[in-house]
Length: 262
Image 1: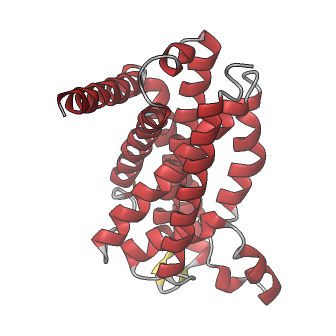
Image 2: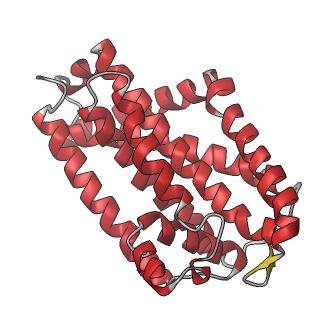
């Protein structure tokens, strides 16, 4: 019993230390981790929301600026949760100090959770910052606070896990930019951030349903504005499936030392 308690206390300390390290890394280089996405999203609000939005008019009964705000917030959460983990874990691989954690008594599951927590923290911090910026341009009052908070948190977990898997397979620095550039960015832009899929022809509406980002963006928009192109329970189901699948795969890769012990 005493041994088990000691092991639990040791694991909690190890996890807390790793999460703290990730948090300090984020705030220490805040000018790289927090400021750029805030500036980028401000430009989106000015150009797409203010200038172009005036010509577009309303979307689903809301002003265009108000309609795209939840999507832009979610886009910032997705890209930063992903980017934080892929850069942090690959940096640990490149410096070869990830091997020290793998041979330590710290379970692989805690190594995974610690890095994912770092991605979630950065994603939520940036999301909060972008939300504050959005309030200067439009009015946002969450219609369903629980949906809003739970969806943004779970989405950050999904893409933090995806970033970890990318980092595990990456062999050089160029490899950590391939997925964000050629997969993540197109999925995000085609995920209903700037438009409602009800505007698309039937065929392309059905094609859009294969994009997981669509469910996350619409669920978050439902939480804030109360409107969505897809059923909310489908969104939670999709997010849950991705979390379980990505977590299981990432944990398997870590335990086998794929991309690390080779």
